[in-house]
Image (cartoon, rainbow, N blue to C red):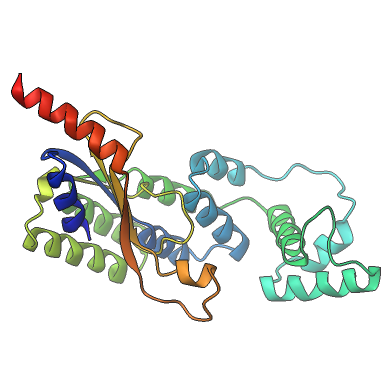
Length: 260
């Protein structure tokens, strides 16, 4: 798909584009390996997928919860140490007793998630060693081969099993090179994401040189898309979108530059 996307830019007269790549599966593998509370895992992955300021949220989660009484203290105490299934069951029972199915527009599941998050945060802050590892992970960027080496070093230093995810990244880099993609022109960043939560692995954007925000082509692997649209089972999917107007505009600019 990346090679095909590059062919699309070439068809519009754009031969020198920036290749930005990332892999949300790597971040998910890191969070899983850190064995964080499920609430922290969901919150961090949600931040990553939706391009919320992940660094700011990590800092917030690192701070100890201020003392003080919560009006739902009893519920929070009952949820301490629970998983999402148990939290949902408890909140469902409580709301059934109260004779309501939502509060302020929130569903039972959303309310259960919120209570579980508050309960977890009351139990203590995000471990600082985990924070340091996440920050080191998110700082890795540059040449894909160098990124692989840095990721293996991080996994070794932190004693985390990220082998399968890193091997997949390294294998993909090899396939890209075999397909004729100049790896030296590709930039990989562990913090790169498309900002859409149905992506499940490799993600990429192609940009005109010097254009920081507007992609020409963008896509990747999104095995979660069909599930969000109603499929009972995940369906493997990969592809990309093309911004025709942007391609046309930058293609014309490149053409003018070539004739000057």
